[in-house]
Each structure stands twice: as C-alpha cells, then as structure tokens.
Amino acid sequence: MSDQEALAEPRRYIVRTYGCQMNEHDSERISGLLEADGLVRAESESDADVVVLNTCCIRENADNKLYGNLGHLKTWKSKKDGRQIVVSGCLAQKDQDLVAQRAGHVDVVMGTHNVHRAAELLAESSSVDGPLTEILEAAVVDDHAMFPSALPARRETSYNSWVTIQIGCDNNCAFCIVPAVRGDEMSRPYDDIVAEVRELAADGVTEVTLLGQNVNSYGRDLQLASRQAGDATARLRPLFADLLRDVGGVEGIRRVRFTSPHPKDMRPETFAAMAETPAVCEHLHYPLQAGSDRVLALMHRGYTASRYLDKLAEARRIVTDLAVSTDIIVGFPGETDDDFDRTLEVAAAAEYDYAYTFIFSPREGTEAAAMEAHFVDPAVVAERFEKLRVVVERSAMRKHEDRVGRTEEVLVEGPSKKDPTVISGRTRQNKLVHFSSPTPMRVGSYATVEVTRAAPHHLFGEFIEQLSEPTHRVRIPVASL
Ligand code: SF4
Image 1 (cartoon, rainbow, N blue to C red):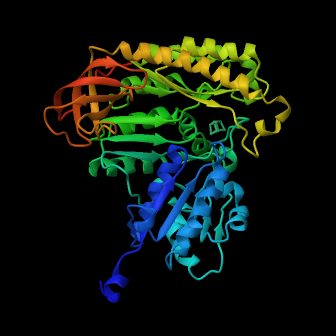
Image 2 (tube, helix red, strand yellow; image 1 turned 30 degrees about the vertical axis):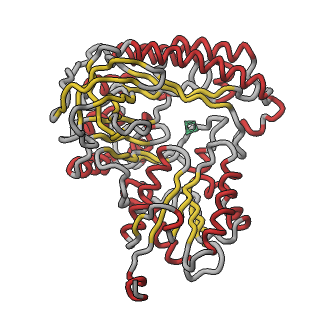
C-alpha cells in the first residue's frame, strides 16, 4: 500500500459498552456520530484508531475495571501514532476530573449529557495537550441533542431499535446512582417519538423498545410545563398509554416493548393500552427490589408489597398471557432474616417468568452507601441469594413448562451462539427459543414454532412456518376501568 493510499484509509473506531440499555443506545448514537464524521467500525482494538469506553457505574467494581482497561489501553495507544481513547457514560459523569487525573493518556472524557458532542470532542482533542473533559451537569434543552434518539445511530440490528422517550429520573431510590448521573426526568416531545418510530418502520424496523428510567411517568413534566405556561388544554390523560397506542399503530411495527416502568406509577390505563394494542408485547418488566415493606420504605420505593402484588394481579387480569420479569436486590443494608423471608414470599406469589437478582453493593454517592453500619454479612447474603435463585427458577421453569405444546410467534435473531445449526429467536413474551428449521431463515424474519421442551432460561421448539404477516391477536376492549 502506498503512503497516499494509507493516508486515504478511513480511521477505525470501536465502542465498548458497559451497563444498561440506555448505555447501549448511547453507544449506537456515538457510533452513528463517528461514522457521520467519516470513521468506520473496527473489528477489534488492534485494528482500531479510536477506542470508546462507554462506562456504567451501576455494577460492582466498575471503577476498578475502568482503570484496569485504561492501563491496558495505554500500551495499545503507544503502539501507533494518532490513536485516541474516549471515556464516556455514567462513570465519566460521576468521576469527572478524576478520570483525567488517574489516566492522563485518555483523550476525551465526556458525560452522559454530552453524547451529541462525541465527534466534535474527538476532533478538538487532537489539538489539546492532555485529556479534554466536557461534562454537562444537565441535558441540553435548546435542541434535540438532549435525546440521543434524535442523533444519527448505527443500529446493531436492522430489525429492532431502541427509542428513547425520556431521560433522567425524579425518584430517589436509596441504592441508585442514576438520578445523580442522568439528571432530572425529561420527556421527549410526543410527536418526535412517533415520527422517529415511523422513520424506523420505513427503514425496515419491526420491533421497537421504548426506553427510559421510569417510562410510565412519561409526559408528566410536559403536561406540567404546559399548564404552568397557562395552557388549560394541556392533556390530563396518561400520556404513556397514549404513546403505546400511537407507536403500536405505526404501519410496519409488529412489536412494541418498553423498559423500565416503576411499580408506583403503573396505571390501569397502561395495562388497557397493552391489551388493546395488538403490537404491544405481552411482557412486563416490573421491578420488585424487595418484598419487605420496611426495606421498601428504606429504599424509598413508594409502594408496599401488597400494593405491588395487587397491581400485578390487575395487569394479569387485563393483559392475557402476560409474562412478568423483575429485579430484586438481596442484602440491602439492615435487611433481616424476616425481611428476606418477605422477599421470598412475594417472589413466590408473583410467579415471575424470570428475574434479575443482585447482591447489594454500595454505589458511592448514594444514600445506601452511607448505611455502612447496617451492611449485611456477605456469607448471610450469599445464602439468601441462593434461596431466592431457587424460588425464581422454580417459577420460571413452571412458566416455561406451561408453554410446551403451544405455538409461538418468534422473531428470528440468528444462529444460536452454542450451536450454529440451530436458530434462536424471541417470542412476544421475550422468551428465547432455540429451534431447527428445514430452510435458512433471515435474521429479523418471523416464524411460528411449536414449543417442545422447557428449560429455566429458554425454550426449545420445532419450526412450523414462516410468517409474512403478524400472527392474529384479538384487540380486547377493556371496558371495566
Ligand atoms: S426509579 Fe429508582 S432505581 Fe430506577 S432509575 Fe430512578 S432512582 Fe434509579
């Protein structure tokens, strides 16, 4: 290759993402911005000129892992001129100048509200000595930059997409760092969301996931702002339910999902919209966190166990064949044996399809992190965690066994990771199904599959037929609200 050809080679980037769906979506936006600026994706770090670490501070030891990765990247950077390192995301937002102090070889440190500046900051950093740090404390309100969905994106798949409907969170759960790093709750304008979904559908996307920290309080701030501005016509209806209906009504959209709702803000209107909108999937992620009212109060969750279970029963009454998943924390500071027994009871009563269970670990800057005197003995926590695992796996297995013999609509995700001769896909209830097919199947296509066998975390099935139209789902008017 001549020098000139080498100069013409586009620069290559790679993004490493840690944490939640919000971060995954931010990474797609960062990738989109870099590609709009002429960079192309690298296959691996050794092939890359730019490495972006999009960090998360939710998981345990996130900072140790970050600084470990940055140590390794110092060597990587020294091997080729012009290589650059970007640190973005929640840990960058939380640690701010600390990243630059501990890792002077980093080129850009940008916060959660600076995603829209990714390409510019990378370019600007070339003429700056040392790390260029830009951390906005709040989202930019003057344009669409506040919502990553309004930026170009490099989607990981062609058939489904995240759609940000809200950023930040107004709650104050004692264990959670999100409000500190993502800021106050801000809803994206309603029409922008529907317009984006229409564009995605025109682009071939058939499944969208509405994304926010507390999706079912979507629109509260918009209504408040309108009323404060003297608009007496500001709608009082629950906007999230409206949004589900409108997004679900976009031509070409076959599946609508959302994550995460907060139990305290769950309303019957949302369940009705789920039941009445054929595209909205029969799956509810419904985070419990703890089953003891005392612990729920310490966590500031805003509901009791019985209120939680009542709403869940209502959801199941209204939405036929609803699958339910949850998050549960074991060993919150001060959790007693009795408190934990309540968690086991509620988990058993809720009969989850699956659960993400976590051992409490303190996040610096949160209220719970300061409750050190009440931290639970790790050996006790480990024992409780195992007991909870048994309870949730039992109900998951039961739920899966109930599906054996049924015909499910499956969205094809591609060959199974363990066995490439087997195809994997997801049902409307978000269950992973592995099945064999007599013909090759296009990723993003739909098929019906007969479920033949159950396992705690997935199903096995037999291919029945490919689908061009959504499986028929009856629109059920919910009259009794
Ligand atoms: S609702 Fe609670 S757990 Fe969820 S993001 Fe807000 S503060 Fe964190």
